[in-house]
Image 1 (cartoon, rainbow, N blue to C red):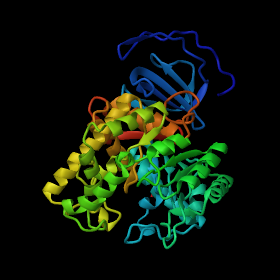
Image 2 (cartoon, helix red, strand yellow):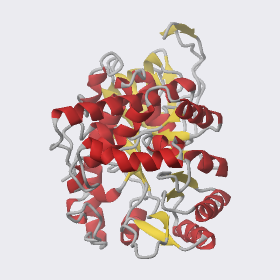
Image 3 (tube, rainbow, N blue to C red):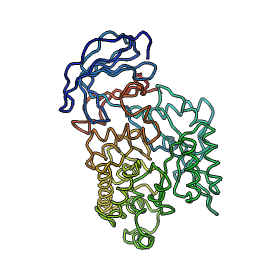
Image 4 (cartoon, one colour):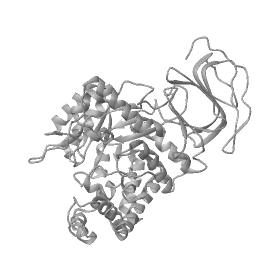
Length: 479
């Protein structure tokens, strides 16, 4: 906050805010600012209310004032934007990126990282421009990576230096798995032998400057617990993909996990071992496929779990209740399935041959969509019951995928104002940065979106024209 601030002895006029009357004295106003946005319709994501005639000031990348009831006199701004009543929201957050998905030269034909990216400083800067162009045009101003090749650590750490020209970046390193005889981990995973080795890896990442850790389902329970406890001791933020009943989601939550990736894993987690074995033995043949490598297999197979469970399975509902009671944050990643099934809001590219679902027959696709919609209905139930959701992509074209994920949450029945809270404040909390991002309040980062047309009145306006402000600076693409 600038020195020489003065008290402005006026009172805000009465403003109608979602049916409420709002009276408040004008707080101290900085005598100068880098940026002033005036006459904005501010979405307060904490309440879902839109506050008209709002002025927002920003200096040195931070929000230094938010004032209601019209233009506040007495300050000088280097740049002023008259919002003319347009909707102003916080910048969006992607809580689930794998960085290699942005770079075409970093993937093999199997869709796995091959370490092809150069780590020299000029290349790191060039890659960051590609990273920015993948996100900022769509209003995504903060990103967490949840698993990349350790070869990329120089780049990932360099990107944590904040810039108005790129999203703020929170890497996790490679995700942790257990060592398995005869099996090499994928390049964006790192294998640990036991609980002590898992804890040591966490300490190594912490010493390098990482503050997020990703645990994967191939991490055995003892090693999982060791990594989780060590990360929590160090104050790190932990998320995990829990799958295939190496552990169940219930067990991981009981251990203390509070961030879970992918709603689809909940179906596998609640089934009995016998039920799951029978499912794996019978379902592929019933779907007309013979191999998990068959094109589109995954996008038939996973929705079939939800067709099997149905829309009101008591085990899933009990797990939803548990997630809410234990304050777990879930990142659903609906777009991962909606894209290949033709339900997404942008064309979807496949990053592995088996992810190409174009070969599915109309009947296969319709059956898979039925399962997807059951899965999405549970996401709506979670929202309604108070489970905090976050937005993550896990997909190519991640900026577009964030917008698609938001629209898919709305399609599932979640009101658009709540979707914005999911994509901003909830996601900020999910990556351990709720004090820095996610709402337009004094002291947070000056990352905002000014929409040309209001997505609260028509959700499809989300993908329309917008002005993106990063660190209090209007963003423009760089070549």
